[in-house]
Amino acid sequence: MTTSSALSPLAALGLLLASPALASVQAPAVETAPAEIPDGFILAQGGTTLVHVASGLRFPAEFAGFKRLRERAFDPSGEYIAIGYDRPLGSGSDRIVVRIAVVHIDDMSAHDHFAIMRQRTMSHFSAPTLLSEGPTKIPTQPRLNAYRGTFSGLRDGQPWHFSLTTVDYGYWSGRMTAAYPESQAAEAEKHLGTLLAEVRLQRPKAPKR
Image 1 (cartoon, rainbow, N blue to C red):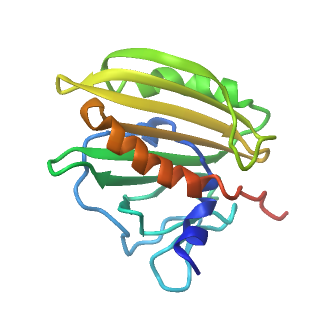
Image 2 (cartoon, rainbow, N blue to C red):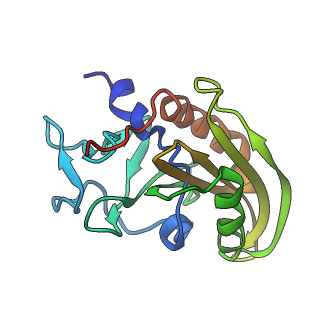
C-alpha cells in the first residue's frame, strides 16, 4: 500500500471535532501511535495504520512529517471518533495541529454543523476574529456539501490562525480544525495543503446493516 492510499480516507475531512475537536492547539506530549486500539478501530496489516471499521477510513501513524496523536472513540459503536495530527514548524517549538472528527449525525447540513461548532472552536483562543466564512468545495468531490471558516486569535499572547471545516457525507459528517502560529503561516499552509490533498481523495462509506 502506498502512503497516499493509506491516508486518503482521512477524507473524513471529517474535517474536525466537538469538544475534543480542537482540544488544545499546544503541542501535546508525544503520544503517537499508541498500542491500545480504541473502540471501533482495527489495525491494518503492518500494525501502525488505524482503520475505522464503520467508515473504512484509514489513519496512518505518520504522513509527510505529520504524526498521529492519541485517538479517541466517544461512542463504543464507533459512530463518533476523533483523530489528531501535528508536525513541527521551523526550527523552534512551533507546530501545526490538525484535529479530525467523524460522526454520524441525522439530517444536519454542513452549515448547521459549522454553526454549532464555531463558538467552541473560537473559545480556544483569546480575542478571536472571524476572517471568512461560507460554503466551500472539495475539488475531488464537488457534489459534497461543505462549509469553512477561517479565524485569527491569540494564544499565550501570540497571534494564531485557525480554521474549521465541516462536510456532510450523508450518513457521516466530518469536522476538521487546523491551527498554527501566524508567524509560521506560509510553511504551515504548505504542509496543510499536502495533508488535505490526501484527505480529499476518498470518502467514508456508510456501515453495512
